[in-house]
Length: 337
Image 1 (tube, rainbow, N blue to C red):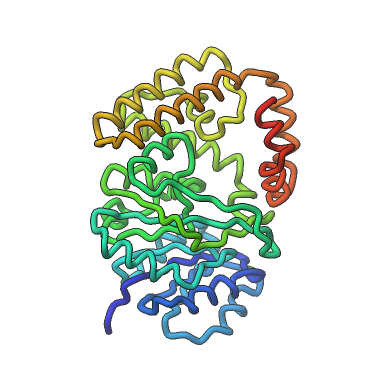
Image 2 (image 1 turned 30 degrees about the vertical axis):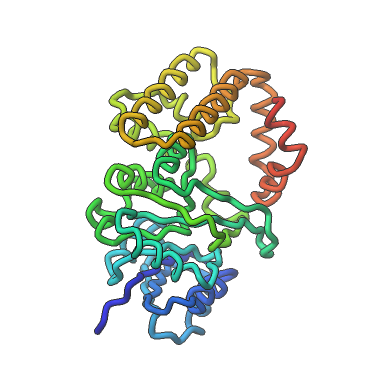
């Protein structure tokens, strides 16, 4: 039997509401040489019954006898994959029908790139577009962006299977942030890229991982950043500084600002020594550093107001929270509190 070129990993837990759309968006891909590995992580709703409606030889269904969690489910699906490339897909998202075709074409033409993401449109539970997220396209800028936060969207990614297997997949100690932890290891092995085209629609709703595990996600991300900096620049920053890098709207005590400034300087020096930075990239980094330092200088303004604002914000539904963030009111609070 001929092995497929792409293996799509789609974990699902109680995903009856949206999983049919997610699966259908894969089956309608213009690129046909793939397998869709759907792993039901011990669902107790009608996820299995919904999947029973699909009859396509490209679908491989796995079922966990109990809920094992996202990370273990992803590793189990990856161990069953036959493809040269592994692509991610969430059970509540939708992929553009040209997504696999365009990602495979790019990776075939650029063998030095091992991890490839795309731009994203974020929608609410009804599919209404909330915003568009565009990430850096080149490896150098992705490497820099990773220093501060999210450099690519996990559900959009296609990665070379041999690289994924060489680092033993996802680290099962990380119940959240498993994608960020994986990228932190792969960034030192291969080049990353993002396509500027919007090839994925990410749904924001109350039961999505980004909503239900928001605080835990931030804690794990800070720990991942700390370990990454220790490996890359040889010094271990405080969790307070790493937490601020993950979420720069947080309050940062004055005592930590000198450490943050030194850390940014060390990382920029590493970038200069590691990469051949084009003049345009260098100018962008200088501008970005000034913007980050300006945000750090203002981070201790009105700490009580910041705390209250974050508490209120985090109680809102994730789609409402996102709309507020994109609004003029949200921009005002971000600038003045």
